[in-house]
Length: 335
Image 1 (cartoon, rainbow, N blue to C red):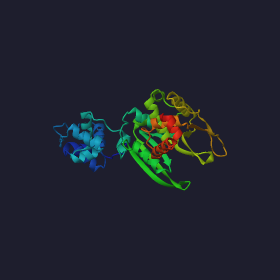
Image 2 (cartoon, helix red, strand yellow):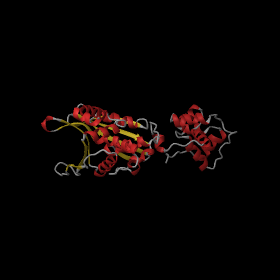
Image 3 (tube, rainbow, N blue to C red):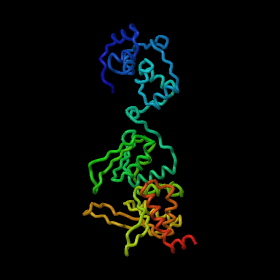
Image 4 (spheres, helix red, strand yellow):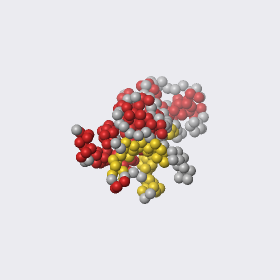
């Protein structure tokens, strides 16, 4: 509720009906807005002036008002100052033109926010990335996305995913992980991103049933939790590997099932690190690995157009080059 305005009825009658002051001028005198004065007039049963009696008439087109109010995000008070009238007059114009009134959250926001574009491949990627590495919460009308990382390329990737939809704030902290400073990122989005709120250990059915959506989801989950590169093995050899490690047992099993459907052969996910109170590991960590050369090349060929993380892109090139440099493998694959 607004603050109390100490203006008696006789004074309001004098200012409004006798002196013919506009609502805006009266509001300015009492340091309030035009709607407050208009409510006072109604409460005192003071008849408001008709358009012909009004001291000011404004001529503003619907397109111009929409531009100022929705695109430039001007307040009704700011628009009123441009047209030398009170903000309640602008409010009535908005109603008359059928222009959507901003919510309280939108009104106090300094930065504009835009609806998700509805692209299902992008949606599948974002869901995969969210389930892997993002914290999401609702705050009134806002969907807030948070993440912390020591990797600048990870922070840049998150920024590129969401900065076209809302404000992104990046803060380099004094907290350390190893020898690196932790960087925090926070994105403010509107409620069209509420599909990111649920954190569930499964892949949505609509993604699993469509090959393109599944590959896009897998790319997002890989950018968040995956590793593509050359692993050290016995005899100082480098083993090319695609690996995802996480606590999401069911998601990894869904990925494995869909990879089998795509003729990509690999072992079932297995526990790579058991839960332990001693190491503050409260859940088992599961890993899915693809290291057979033919299957590895297949999964990399599928993922490459969808991967966005620079380190993962570099890993794909490095692994592919390592494999095709092995003569016996090259002859087997391309014969």
